[in-house]
Length: 269
Image (cartoon, rainbow, N blue to C red; front, side):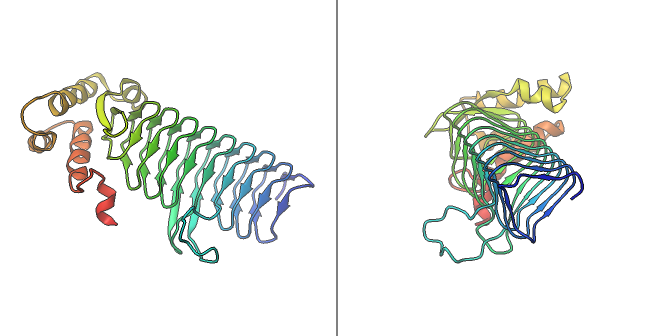
C-alpha cells in the first residue's frame, strides 16, 4: 500500500487489498476481500462491495456504488451472490451502479477503457467489453452483453439478454429489446429497429475504406430490400466470401434469429 492515500473518514475492511498510488476519498467504503489495483481514484462516498476486483487506473466519482448485491425482487437478502471484475482505465461518473452476478460462482465482467456516465446502471451477469461509452442514465439489464466500441446515447434501456454489437450506436431514449449487429445504428422503442450504419464507429474501429463500403453494402442489402426477410438475405450473404466486418454482421443477424424475440443470449437461458 505504498503511496496509497486513505481519508480518515473512509472505511476499508481489513481483508481488502489496495495497490499503490490509489486514493480513497472521504466517506468511501471498501468491502471485505476487495482487490484494488494501482493508481485508482475513489472520490467521496464511493462504495465498493465485497469481493469486487478492480484493476488499475480507474476513476470512481462521487456516490458510485460498485459491486453491491443485485436488484432481484425475490432474492433472499442472505443469499450468496457472485463476483464483479473490472479492468483498467475505466471512468464511472456520479451515481453509477454496477452489480455482481446473481449466482454464487457467477461473474459480471467489465473490460477496460470504458466511459460510464452519470446515473448509468449495469445489471447482474452482464459482459461489458472495452472502449464503450454509456451516456447519462442508460440502463443495462441483467445478462446483457455490450461489445467493444459500442456507444449508447442518453437514457438507452436494454431488455435482459440483449447483445449490442461492437462499434454500434444506440440513439437517445432507445429501448433495445433485440440484438443490434456490429457497426449499425439502432433506435426506437417497441419497435426497435436498425436504422443505418455507424460511420463514427467504423472510424473508431479502424476499418479501411473498402471495409466501410462493404458494411454499407451489407446494410443496404439486409435492411433496405422489400422482398424476402432480413434472415434469408443474411443466409445468402453467409455463403459469400465477404469481408470479416460483414461476416460479423451476418453472424449477429443469424444468431439473433435463433430466439423468437431476437435475443441470442436468451437461447442459453
